[in-house]
Image: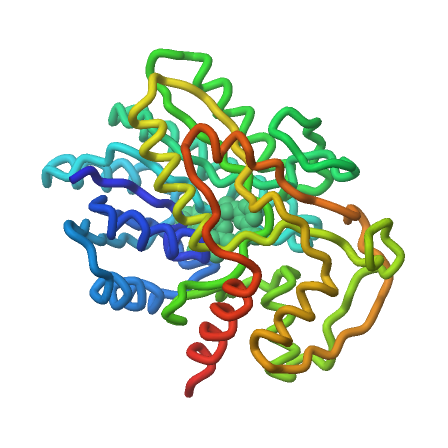
Amino acid sequence: METILTTGGLGYIGSHTAISLIKNGFNVLIIDSLKNSKQNTLKNIEKIIKNEKAEKKGKLFFRKGDLRNESWLEKIFQEFKDENHPIKSVIHFAGLKSIGESIIKPLEYWDNNINSTLCLLSVMSKFSCYKLIFSSSATVYKTNIKNKITEKDLLDPINPYGNTKFCIEKILEDIFKSDKKKWKIACLRYFNPCGAHHSGLIGEDPLINHLNIFPTLLKVIEKEIDKLPIYGSDWPTKDGTCIRDYIHVMDLAESHLASLIYISRNKPNFIHLNIGTGKGVSVLELIKTFSKVNKCIVPYYFTNRRQGDAAIVVADNKLAIKIIPWKPQRDLNDICRDTWSWFINNNKS
Ligand SMILES: NC(=O)c1ccc[n+]([C@@H]2O[C@H](COP(=O)([O-])OP(=O)(O)OC[C@H]3O[C@@H](n4cnc5c(N)ncnc54)[C@H](O)[C@@H]3O)[C@@H](O)[C@H]2O)c1
């Protein structure tokens, strides 16, 4: 069984991906500093895995630490090599991800996101580990693209967070070019990940506040805030609110499994893939679906547009569907239902 290192693997996307990998027979080593995640997620991943029906399940390992500690990271690679579980591939989720916070603390974002990647790449090279999947983001694209965004569209991030993702993609390109016979790298550009595992045991649980719509919507349900802010009512869209591409986190998780299998079976390469559903949903449509599926009321109000927002951000996902291959299996109803189960479960005292 191959061992995959997932950096930042106790976070939102990494925890869901661990389930996909383990039930498909991969061993998963999670390294996480717990800067934006909680240790009890590990127990919940284990619970889910126990209940999964699978022919051959992989094992789960965890080491707490910061990727920027290169000598420590090297020891972990050595430890797994010595114990006959050499790390053969890495999925690099670790990073700080709040756009708003990155504007206030750019140095922290550059230091954490770039230096952790540099340490990781250096240790991977030392241990001849050349398969890498990187968590990139739709924020690398120029924002005012009218049609669905393809991988060939212009890149022009407009905030420090997006700049770090762009910069890491460039570092990876340089690494690949330095020895095109070795590296197999896929940059997955996620659109709007949301939803939760259907068990309700894991979901989006950030320690650092960020303005994604679902965590904010749940704060309204919890009555932590009165109403959901909708940024702008006069966008050039069918109902005046922004349109986004909401992808279920388990579909996203499965795209990592598919990408890993794809890069493993193919010759060294450096690719970018949009990971989204290809379907646009407006903020008002999302609220309506959430209320209907979960039989609840979501009070909202309109406020000013946010700087840097765009009317429509939807993925052209044809390339991923064609080459890895992979296809989203879940819809907005599933996203709303699973978010609710996670919310109810997470709020049990
Ligand atoms: N969630 C989204 O909306 C979204 C969209 C596009 C891209 N991404 C990217 O996907 C990746 C995963 O996102 P997520 O939503 O799971 O985020 P998350 O914050 O839930 O998970 C990231 C994890 O990385 C850990 N971490 C951060 N810096 C670290 C370091 N130096 N060493 C070790 N661990 C470290 C954090 O503790 C956290 O558990 C991130 O790189 C993010 O930028 C996320």
